[in-house]
Length: 395
Image (cartoon, rainbow, N blue to C red; front, side, top):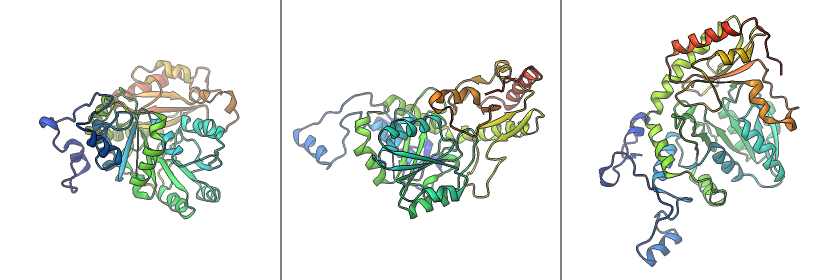
């Protein structure tokens, strides 16, 4: 990213790069597995760390380096790394901090696979996780002493409750506890946890950063020291490298990120407020509607949830939708729905007793880039089709 004029806005920096080879406007895609050296001494210098030539695309690739610089700038961090999925970014970040015998404090209603990582593989490595109410400062504070990591996700999954990131990061630092925040929902456009004192920020870049539903990727940003720890202690051995092609697609997605986020913000708010007034909607879980005084959000995305009344048959409602598709993920151009009862079945029988605090009548909605009037009409006709039929809301 062009660093010659740091006074430039984020929008301008995302569009303008330093000159690339042969005057290319887009970064070249280095579609190669390895890089060779001109001489024996050049190879020695690279392995001694005296020069920074790329060696092997599992470890470093010039296309990926352009992406790393852009993500670091966006998140106001010193460095960043990209991975082949959001979960690769999350697992690399967590495993760079915790060791067997350590304890993690994690907020409730975290992303499902983060929960399963902590409850499954991490537990088998003798890494304990305590799940706390992220909206309750005292609940978090009392669990911090002796912990190694505080894992945050603001807003959290399904309930979209914000955490006071600045206060929690300060409390964690006082106990020498490192913090990670999943910032996928807000994107770097609407929130920068590093500026609030959080140590590492992770994203499922599959979502807004890509924005086109054609790339699976993840990124981590933070201080140079912590990113180097990931890069040296974990990343080379887990092997979850991002291809140069996917890095190029993410760079492409970043160019329109501010524009797309504004559209998701506007359309999402419009739909959320209409749902809040609907007779068969009990509540809407959207940060703008349940806004906290401490909120650092500069805007909102298109992802939120709402709880329907017992008069609505959820399977019929979902099947009646024409523009909203039934599907996981979000952050692309297309609008999506996921019913809570279906989503939580993925946790399996072993976790059936876990209280997620999400009622079976909850539906997660992602408002894409379609015309919001068309999307609202689609929701209206689905409500009409599902009203007064047997509810189907039982868990």
